[in-house]
Amino acid sequence: MNSLRSGKNWVSSKVQGHSAQAQKETNKAIAKDPNVRTSERVRAAGNAVANSIDEHSHKRNADVNKHTAKHNY
Image 1 (cartoon, rainbow, N blue to C red):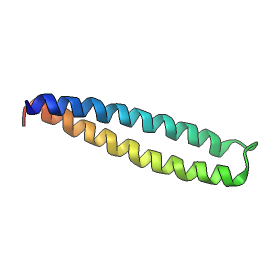
Image 2: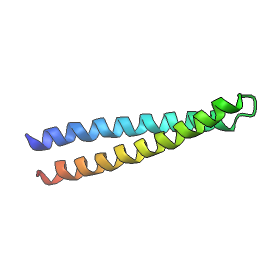
Image 3: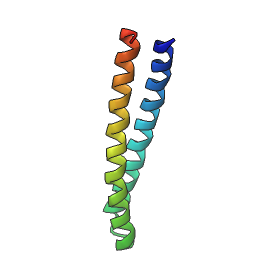
Image 4: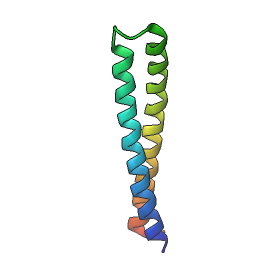
C-alpha cells in the first residue's frame, strides 16, 4: 500500500516539477524581453527564481518518492 501511495506521489511531484519548469522558462522569456515594461520584467525575474526553487523542490520530492516506492518503505 505504501508503495502505491509513493508511486502516486512520485507522479504528482514529477508533474508539478515540470509545471514549475515551464513557468520558469516563460518568466525568463518575459524578463529578457526588451519590449516589456521594466516593472513586469523585474516581477517575471523574481517569479522565475521562485519557480526554479519550486522545480527543484518538486523534483527532489519525486526522487524520494520514487526511491521509497522502489524499496517499499
